[in-house]
Image (cartoon, rainbow, N blue to C red):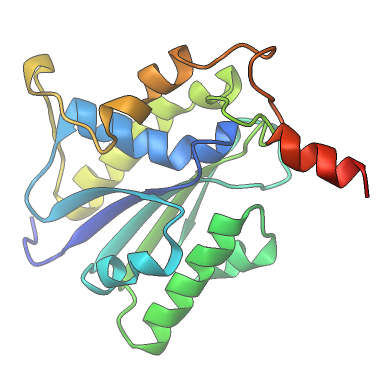
Length: 208
């Protein structure tokens, strides 16, 4: 293993909008189930945009996990590398966080501090307009395959394979209140909470 190769495994997305949260949930699950060498950092990047820049600047390798609109059937997995990563992200914007992350990559490149290697592992979302919703079954079914692929990359390409974490030693990148289980099982009913956004904003928009 090249211990000088600082690897950042970054999940980005917005857990408030159903499948938009795939990358965040993937890194959360990876942290819960596996431990890795000290040169591997697992991070929930959420929708932080340029606040992620220092983390990219200090990484030699970036493995990015995200929900990506490929225009393919829901749940389809795709992988892009190095120069194809920013090129693809710029081809079709799916969300505000994607635009923000383009800015991060662009800024890191201008500063000459972009990771030398970049790998994007993405999944085609099924639903993005379910406010407060969790992952759809179709996309949730891709969590383990994606994590298997990420661990394979870490093991075979960087010699940084992880070890299963004992249940008693489980950790998480998310606080308990917004962990996937608590978030999805604690969701109010459709009668109690609007599924497509803030009803006050929607009512105002309808009156225009």
